[in-house]
Length: 212
Image 1 (cartoon, rainbow, N blue to C red):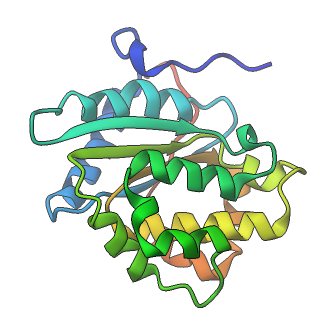
Image 2: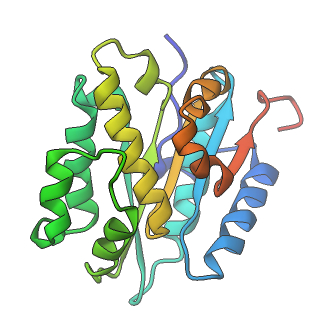
């Protein structure tokens, strides 16, 4: 059993990684200057502090920017919590992120499943039509579970990756994905989703040292 990670409400006692945290914030902010939200991959070895960096470092910072015009709200999920039904679980989360999505014709298409001919621009447009002041931060923690959980069928895994690809292309969700770096090659082997990596910020964090 590994050490418990810091939570979102523990930013005041979270120590270390300040330089790395500020560097990532600056890179995300550069993307947001164009009115878009970024997708971030946080890679590292098991126990390197990936979850703590996101939950106690990055998320509290962006929530501190909340005002009457923009409200950041975090949504933290792990693939294994859906007991193999990862695609349906992500669809349910999509409704939480963007209330009103179910009233858009694209919702029926999503429920039927995403194939290789799905129009991702259609999804982006539907998300923008929701007109919410909330800025969702979707944190997919321990993303390696998508590939290691035997309850997740390959077909469902592919559907989930397609949906996440669509969310990334929409630029309407700050999507943060943490995963062990030894699983990253499994993700990139799905060549259709190379655009997620190409358009994302990728950070491979070292293990915590005494200087941290």
